[in-house]
Length: 581
Image 1 (cartoon, rainbow, N blue to C red):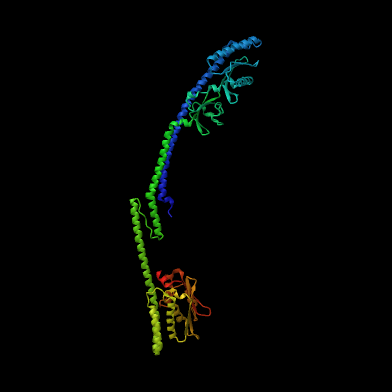
Image 2: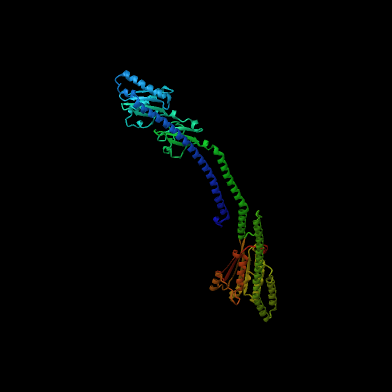
């Protein structure tokens, strides 16, 4: 069998994969590279917007921080508060003047939602008006501020930067405190919702902006991405990378920037589908080109298979059939001119080889038949000498009646043996010939030779090679007859073994085979001597082998209380069947 790794089909498929995979991979990579480039450009653009707006928020918060410090240092009412703690009326008037100052400033600068003052000694909180849409929210803001200023300590980070604080469920604000040094705190409060970037300002297009805590949790638009947390380490201005966040079937590109002076991060969420909408047609073209290239390569592979691989496989298959003896194999014409010539040449060679093999086979059959006829004729001179010797002895004693009988049997005998054109005879014909031979021996040895032939019904029509049994009868007379006290008896039994075989048993009451001879016969050694002895048995064995092959058997032994016994088993054939082989 051909190793598949060495086949032409395998090599072509490997070549196809070697070309197709890098090509499709290159196209897909270019598609990915283009998409990634767009993402980076959009992310960079939005990053710049985040930085710009972050600086604006920083500037506003820094301005508010500076204002608080200036009030704490320069406003005389702030300095007078600590001295008016025991005078309620003056204390109240001082608070009113401070709130008026804060309100006037706040009227022209609304970067914060409210400002407040807290007295540590009196635990008194007073603030500018709170703009809210509900009383509950107002109370939440006041409660949150009061709790913060009561619990805060001098080294708290609220005195160093703007800190995010949750004042209501899911609502956050920035608070900054300034210590006046007289047990009074100034502070500012700004809701993160009011610091949100207008969507039309940074052109997010179906995206959104949000403030993010230091741990990556969203503080505004909290329901937009569910429980996802962002990586706050990517909020540096110098870092140009972006994050990808998935929510349901939407994907967002996220850019962030840390707002200096606060603990919050400003982030922008841009939908990837919106970002790549202008790239859609380009990506579609790339994908179509990739699919088209793949389809073309597959069509080309099918085309190669049709014009090269299939004819090649047919040629290999035809050669294998020829190798296994199917000489009727022919190849059909191919679409390719080269394979058409090869197939035509193959068909011609197969036909010529078939004819040549038939001719050689017929020649072998003719040689085989000639050899069998030669073997058949080899028996005749051997018996002829004995017969002439018998007639000679009868002539000496002038027994003309017996000579006539002898000659009549010799005529029958030699008429049968000289039919060299006969390939097979029936068992009945062969037995008639054997009777002629045995009667000749009876003439030779009066009252000293007896015989009996038993043929089972139906076995007489079986066909056997001519002169198959005579050599064994002749050898029995020659070697087994020793002028015994009783007549020499020859027994021939022919019977059927089922429907497809016949069994021929020949035995006598003579001396039997010697131990040395029996060993030679049973071992299958060649018995033909240089002086021509045992030529008949060798010829029978040779003829049986060439005619019947392994479907016949020839065995020798000595019968109990008797002489030699020969057993032949042959396939059952009629004369017509025999000659058709």
